[in-house]
Length: 322
Ligand SMILES: NC(=O)C[C@H](N)C(=O)O
View 1: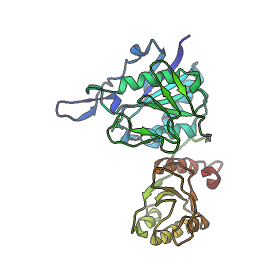
View 2: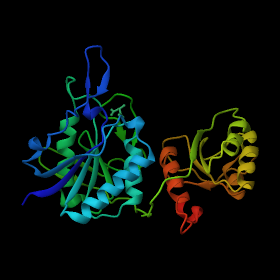
View 3: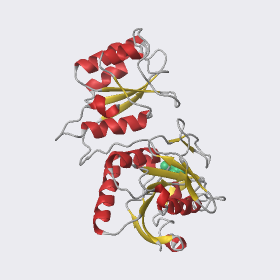
């Protein structure tokens, strides 16, 4: 029997066309709308357009809106899986946001394209067909939010965009893809990383993300205080270290009860408190900096934002990030 799949479009290159000057732009009418007819042989598709935005225009508010659309739809209709088309620039962020804030057992699959709909070798409809096949698959149930592009299945937790233009852009640096899509089957070969569900109903707080570099000074860190941010994620050096002057700025934030989360600017490996020199990760940890376990900066930022929005039942951030 055919599965019931909800297909939600949000925009991105998969929904764009290139004009005669070579500019890739959203169209008034999303060229993907109506694609459900081509997908009918795989599933019963209900199609909706949540918005039609380039993904750099998407904010946590749109992510929360998507979560709410999903919850509403699932409470009113029988549903076996969801596919969301999305721009690739921030796709990993929306995927991770939904991973943290939903707890359905059916698959939620995000996909996109690196080439617009009228370019030679456009990858959009191909990726979409594969995403629908994964969303229909029994194997993909209970695996959290997934990203399907270029014949691979990845977990939201680990995936990141690694190339500006290649169709092979999405990679999971720590663990690799958790599965493959071939012409004939959907195959998941790795157990997913354990998920954590958080109930979130509003996104009001402000969290910044700063990259640490050699010779960085404390003024940018102190600006977090003066600009009124509620928290900051730092992409530290190596295993999670910062220059000495940055450590002075961090102490000021901690003294003002502003949470400071540390990830590594290396895209492989896990940041942890090892070094005891001034600005070393061990010293930072001792002063109250929290290490984010194996997620990248943009995802740690969303996690902190979600954590800080638990106002009715405040969350222990240290425990949350561990
Ligand atoms: N390939 C893409 O989808 C990139 C585009 N700039 C977007 O994220 O909307």
